[in-house]
Amino acid sequence: MRVLNNVLVTGGSGFIGTNFIRFLFNREQGVSGDGFQDKAPEAEFSGRVINLDSLSYAGNPANLSDIEAEYGGKRYFFIKGGIGDSGLLDSLFGDYGVDTVVHFAAESHVDRSILGPRVFIETNVLGTFNLLEAARKHWKDRSETRFHQISTDEVYGSLEESGAFTEDTAYAPRSPYSASKAAGDHLVYSYFHTYGLPVTLSNCSNNYGPFQFPEKFIPLMIQNILEGKALPVYGDGKNIRDWVHVYDHNRAVYLVLTCGKTGEKYNIGGENEWENRTLLDAIIKTVSQKAGREEASVRAAITYVKDRPGHDRRYAINCGKIKRELGWKRIMNFEAGLEQTVDWYLANQNWVKTIQSGEYLRWIENNYGSR
Ligand code: NAD
Ligand code: TYD
Image 1 (cartoon, rainbow, N blue to C red):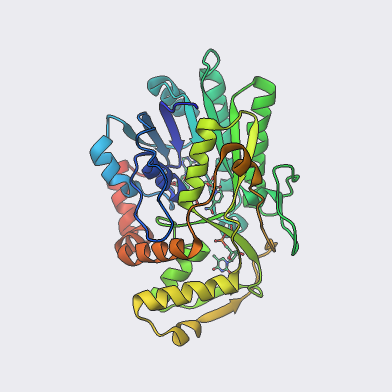
Image 2 (cartoon, rainbow, N blue to C red):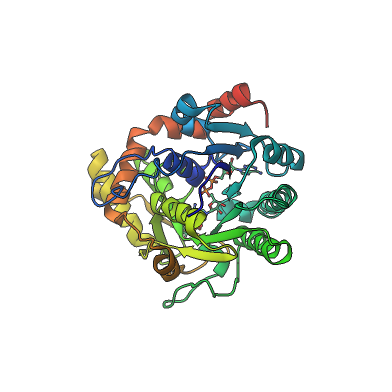
C-alpha cells in the first residue's frame, strides 16, 4: 500500500476536491442510514496537502476554512493559482517535494462548454499537459510517485437502453467538455507509455453531495424549489444518469492512489440509474417534506424546456474492476445520500447565496487578489 506524503490536489476548492480534502482530514458530515460507517482514513493519512486552485466561479476556499484553521501552514497549504502557470507548478513541485498529484482541476459543466468551449481546452487539455510536464521534470529520479487523473464516464459517449461502460469501452466523447476531458486522459496515458510516468486514471459517473455548485442538476433543483423558481427539465426528461455520492467517489480515489496499479484505469459508479424526470420527483418529495412545501405546487413548477444540443441519452458504469481488484464498494445508499444532501443545502443557504453573489467575488479579490 502506497503512503501519501506531499499531495498536490488541483481544484481542491471545487465540489469534489473540497470533499476529497475533507475526506483526507476526516471531516465528513455525518449521515443517517448505511453511510459513513467505514474506517476513518485519518489514521492512514498523515501527510501534507497542497491545494492549488485558481478560484474560478466554482471554487470557494471557505469550504476548507476549518481545515485551514487547524492545519494551515503545517499540513495544509492553499495556493491560489492556475495549472496554466508552468512556472508556479515548477516551484510547487520543488518547494513541497510533491510525490502525489490528484488532478481534479477542470472546467466541469457541459452547458458552459457548449456556450464557451475555449476555457475547457485551456484548462482540461493544456492545464493537464502542464501538470504532466512538471511531474515528468521533477520525478525523473524519484520512485514512489503517482499522478492520478480524475476523469468522467462522459468520455465514453452515450448509451442506448442497455449495456454499461467498461474500462475497455472506446472513448467517443460528444460534448466540448467530454472531448476536453478525453484529450486530457489520452495525454496522461501517453506519459505512462512514453516516459514511464506512474499514472492512474479513474472515470466516475455523476456525483452528488455537499458543496456542489448549484448549476448541476441536483443542487440546481433543490435551490430552485427553495426559491420558488421554475424547474427546467431538458428535452423529454428521459435521459439517464448514474448517480454516486461524492464520498463514495473519493473513497474510491483514495483506494486507487494507495492500492491501484500504475498504467491502469478504474471505473467508478453508483449502480444507481435514474431518468431525470424520476429523479426530479424524488428531489421534489424530499425537499418539500424537509422544507415544509406543498408537493403539488412544487410539482407545478416543472417546466420542460428545449433540449441541450447533443444531449447524451444514457450513461451507465460497470465498476466490476475496482470492486474485484481493490475491494471497493458503494456504501452510501441513494435515499440517505439525497436526504443528507438536501439537509446540507437547507443548512447552508448562506453558502449558496455567497457563492452566487458579487459579494463573494469581492471577498475573493480582497483575500486572494484579482483574477
Ligand atoms: P468544480 O467545477 O466544482 O470544481 C473545479 C475546481 O477547479 C474549482 O475549484 C475551480 O476553481 C478549479 N479550477 C478551474 N480551472 C482551474 C485552473 N486552470 N487551475 C486551477 N484550478 C482550476 O468541478 P467538480 O465537479 O468538483 O469536478 C472535479 C473533477 O472531477 C473534474 O476534473 C471533473 O471533470 C471530474 N468529474 C466530475 C464529476 C461530477 O459529477 N461533478 C463526475 C466525474 C468526474
Ligand atoms: P448535469 O448535472 O449538468 O450533469 P451532466 O450533463 O454532466 O450529466 O445534468 C444532469 C442531467 O440533467 C443531464 O441529462 C442534463 C439534465 N439537466 C436538466 O434537465 N435540467 C437542468 O437544468 C440541468 C442543469 C441538467
